[in-house]
Image (cartoon, rainbow, N blue to C red; front, side, top):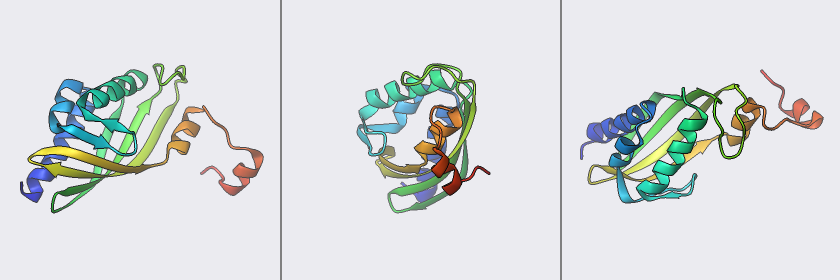
Length: 145
């Protein structure tokens, strides 16, 4: 596939996520898909993870801020935004909003996503939800903006 087609595939993946359409979302990945950071393998794992995430954050929206493609890889920087309105991995709804930036590298094989590696700040995500709090020492080291 061309670099532009690979980038379009990733845009389609995020459009499906914004529609919370797990059935469509898994059509963009290979049967042996691996997400290294979320430790997901295959479409069923992805469907289960996204279903839980969408229930916890029913207003979730992902904005693509930047993409680059080289060979069979697509790099994307995205911004996630949502409100914790439903239970998420045993955490009762807090009603708090979150914003999180992530950078992901996708590997494309025959027009589908075969692999993803991501970098995101999970600690800040849980801090925004109010699930964790910094100690006094950490507050001095990492003052809030």
